[in-house]
Length: 137
Length: 137
Image (tube, rainbow over all chains, first blue to last red; front, top):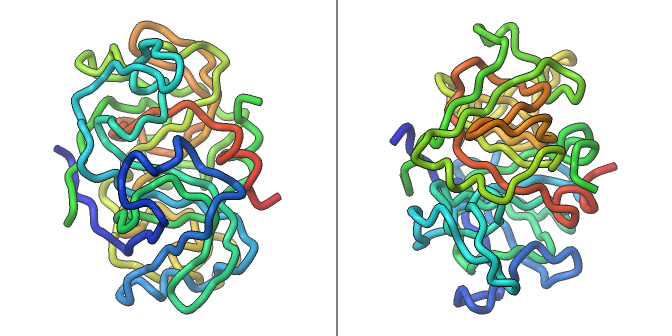
């Protein structure tokens, strides 16, 4: 153990069970709400509608000891670091999405892949250099 | 507090002080080494050289209570969630980089922005849909 995380808010999605959650972010998926706790609201100053942000959140109730897993669909075995499975040693979810609407201390975004009530860990402005230029395609 | 993090490895960079660290990822920066602990080595199965991965790491010894900060360069005040500052409620760094070389349980990548010895939290394959298509540019 190296450190402890704090909840800075909650994510509201239409998904009440893991089975309903999509396997990945859906750019045209349903609207979700990212609600930042009042205490951290000033941290949002400078963000604007239509901006792309990176959200970090915590996948609760997962198995943190499954270092090799079967790939969804194919059933092929892979290391956890070659998969986007929520079952990982540090189950942190990362999504890059556009802010559709900014309303006080909550953001509306589309197509997140997590359960309703998921703890929010961080919001960062998306960067061109690291998130775009160096990707695999 | 919601959860605890585990170190899955360490990042080796040329930077021994915060002042030396670049403000962001440098696609053509110096070679760095991401060393995964033996215990988690099987988690790397399926990753390959030239693949783009997302690294998550922990910025140690930062101030987790600075919700509004001055922007580097301009001095303009901004909320922490509109900045990529390492000083944040949950100081998790995220970098999308290409694997230059895969050598046992360590990866060589270019241009990370963190101190030598930084704790590694996670490695994920970079995704086209969330990390590329939806960014700000």
